[in-house]
Length: 238
Image (tube, rainbow, N blue to C red; front, side, top):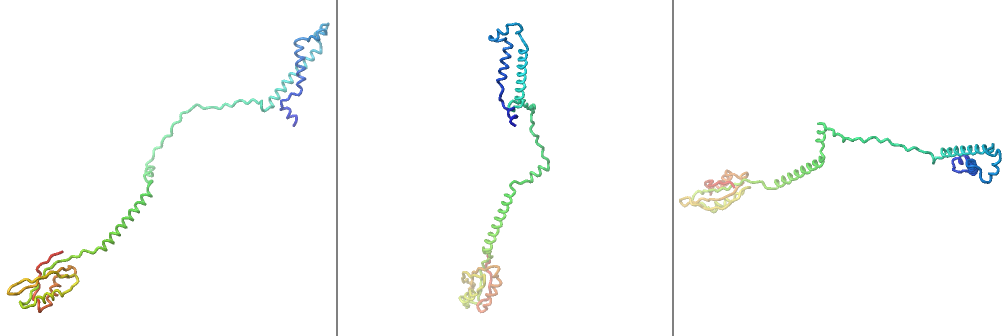
């Protein structure tokens, strides 16, 4: 684990060795330095086995150095060259708007059947029906309370006595003594007939459904001592 860790670390422990090899290489390439000129001036000092061996060591060291650097670069995650990914972009394509589907007759019928305000209309119809029924009921009650129109008639009667000796005051009292439901007596007067005889002319109002002319004549002629006959002088509907 420690070795693997040091492989990935950028630490050059034996850098001094490579510095010495590099210095010796450049000395070999450029010639001996001033201190070594006297030694190389003699015969056989131009180049020997020791000088070739140093050049080979330097080349091997350089090759090892390059191999080590390439290994570090490959193993280090920060030096991994990642090729930029190119995204394929398709050419722009014109988007056509979606075509509107033509509505079929069945769909049109369904749309017509949909009533957005159906509930409101039903409530309004119920309210209108309730108001109409309430008004009809009130009208019926008002009509029931209102008295029905009663058909009435105004009758003028001529009541004739037997002779001139008949007490006309007593005769009128007998006629007015007749009390019937729907009969109301009115004004009266004595009208001369002839030979000193006068007749009683009396007004009355009757309800047609309750009192008729025949009933009046029958009731008045019951007073036989004073009344000879009864005639209808005038008859008018009220």
